[in-house]
Length: 271
Image (tube, rainbow, N blue to C red; front, side):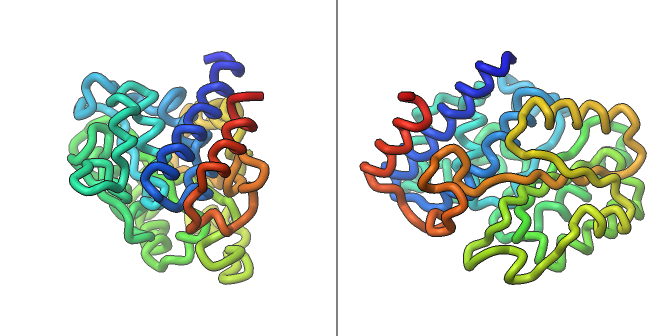
């Protein structure tokens, strides 16, 4: 995809997220907006998947461990061709399959149920180990939040993966520097995540989580010589793309108004 096409796609997906959040009175828009570009890089440039055959056995697996950003994943999967975007407009409503957190088998393209933070990386370890035992070549990717890395289960999985030589596992940390109640480094400072994971036995990298082409280049570089599990700390901005939402933690739990969506849309697609 050209840089212009990627930029237009990124803006459209952010617009969809905000419009659906307004219609369905849903929260977590800040966390959704921080990971949009990561999801685009994965689903458009990196993952080996077949939207027309979502259960293809050899597909790469993806787990959204920060399940509260489900709306971002649903929107990206819709644009990638798994289902019409109109279906996502039922998000978080009674009887909708598009639940507030992803549920396995509810929707095409969802490989694991997530929601309770800290569990996704352990599930990813299991999927990666299963691929090795069965001799299959698919890779497993897990997206976690930086605040989520305070969960003890993350570090149990971080020890497990190198110990079992899971060089088919990639964890991406959406490092937007915030969590529900404040700045991540003020609540429990985990710096440096890159150093910690390296010392645990991972090949760790740090990138700009909004540079889609840069992320793609890094993925292909590390895949060419992958001998250990890979950790990518992606520096992102909570609320990315909308000036009055960026780095404002009110948007962790705030539903956008009609005026908010109108103003955001002017910045995203009506410029």
